[in-house]
Length: 251
Image 1 (spheres, rainbow, N blue to C red):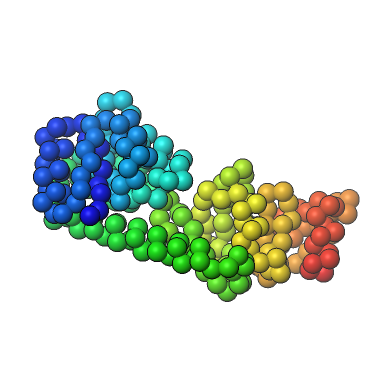
Image 2 (cartoon, helix red, strand yellow):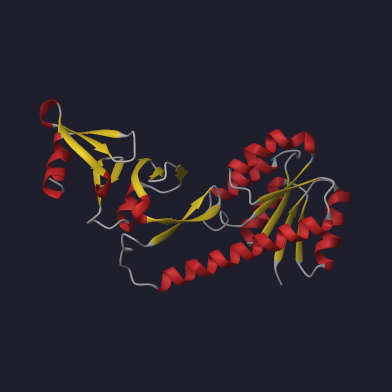
């Protein structure tokens, strides 16, 4: 039986959700505040969370921010219940990776459909992670796909489509060959453990490039180099320290 945590301060809305979900075969965990919802999420690890946005004390946005900061809870799909007047707040909530949203007053069938879809996707992702854990510790091949969490949702990215990666602390921006880019929670050190050494090269303390996308290399000031990448307006100045590495790997 799948567990669903409800975070809703309105007792009538909360009671209606409990009745609907229990009748649909779910185990329901009720909560009336964001603080209580966070504690229950960490303790009971529900399969899905339904949360109001505007609540006294911690808001729904505060809840998703906190859950995103913990490994055990950041992948739990969260559906927001929102009134139309809260749509501005909802945009911020979706940026933090909310799985979906339902506008109040909600349609029971729409809500149940959204719940089932999100639980199925979360289960599929968990199964994928289990399969990956069973693999050996080898790095994936250049043409293989890896799974990344982008705005709380799994994305399958082909390594050969990555042009470059720029990182700052535990976050990195990934630039793709199709012109798209996205920010994810992954440090450059984590990237080095995944990317094949024969195709990706660290050229700066915060930058990794795909050497297959190097368009040209020019000499620069004081033995430094300037690298231009294909299909990209990006270029990089490489210090003398990293220039030696470039010459031995590429030139």
